[in-house]
Picture 1 (cartoon, helix red, strand yellow):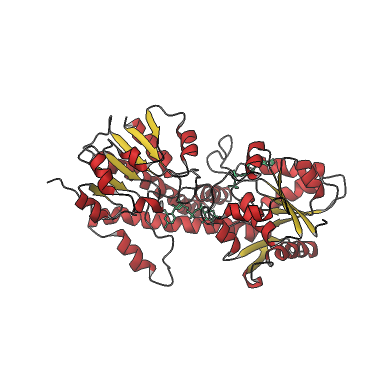
Picture 2 (tube, rainbow, N blue to C red):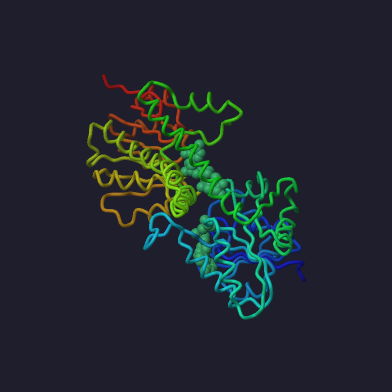
Length: 459
Ligand code: UDX
Ligand code: ADP
């Protein structure tokens, strides 16, 4: 069958895979090909054991795969055939050289740009899907235009706002689709071509078109604002613990103000995920490089608060377990950076585990989806770690439970049975405030919620 358009996506990760699956499902007259250098990942996308866990994703992939959705490692062929190329390769924080620990590492993006130049035989629209520092498109345009073939590449920014765990829903019902382009005739045409893809299922009123730099920067700002809310409420959880106020009640009371709104006000052991920290660091780095130190300091404090919250959680565990966890079996309930994903990138669980291991605790990590990643994250650490998907088996003989991830299934565990199997005194540290603390206390646990009065049996 001949397709109306050939869409290529370079990078088959958490962003590229789900986004292209939804585009393919909604645009059956377009051929959508997703390529990646990682052959194992591509193989995974071609089976029913997808390389990422995302509710509802398999059904969408199955609908389109083999019809107009294809996963391949042949990047060159993909580039040659494409009219539109989405680039969603990883852009981690630099770990070396100038800007290490702050700036984005753009080597994968740049390599992709060179590959596009090498294999393209005609003009194409290049879409930035990965989150990138503001003005990256300019550098990309320079690389792409430096070709001897007389081909025109129009660079467009279409940042993805999907959130892991609800990626399919976010893609099907986005709050908005943002498309940034050059304010030229060809820029406007390219933006329209991208808008034409989304209007198949998204209301035209939800499509926001801006200049390139606004689109690039909006993505960083959206993540920074969301992270800032989490850090703000987490800072208050510390104050609540000192004053007897309850952070849950504060969130409700404050979030009821329609100007503030209720979402992203759940106190936690801290935000994780591949985006928040990376994007804020990036914002801080960019601000500093323009000499805007006050702006940089302001946003850096959001990250500092996040680190403080994780440190505080570990300190609470050690302090309340009589100042020592040496040889004590402690279960981490959850390891993913949030529920409904197997992703552990920047998960606070990594920090908590490494600190408790330093303190010579005996760790048991339990998670319904993230144990494979957890094993990898903790591989180099000295000490005793077990991985046990079944929370009941994990808890047997343990002294402490620490909730790291807000998995729904943890709320309905039989804590009476768990308590009976544990060493006494038994402790619960609820880093997500998802459990019924009063009930746990009545069962016999000593309970330490976040930002709420503790419930202990000690005199
Ligand atoms: C985020 C953005 O939401 C998304 O728009 C962007 O495209 C990518 O980054 P994601 O990292 O998948 O998505 O997860 P998100 O739901 O935003 O949560 C981020 C972190 O904040 C998680 O660790 C989560 O547990 C934490 N969080 C969130 C809280 O601690 N409290 C809250 O109230 C909300
Ligand atoms: P994100 O969360 O932004 O989607 P991921 O790390 O999940 O990030 O996915 C990025 C993907 O991009 C990885 O699967 C990686 O192998 C792929 N990738 C990186 N560089 C290239 C490249 N030059 N060509 C093709 N794929 C690439």
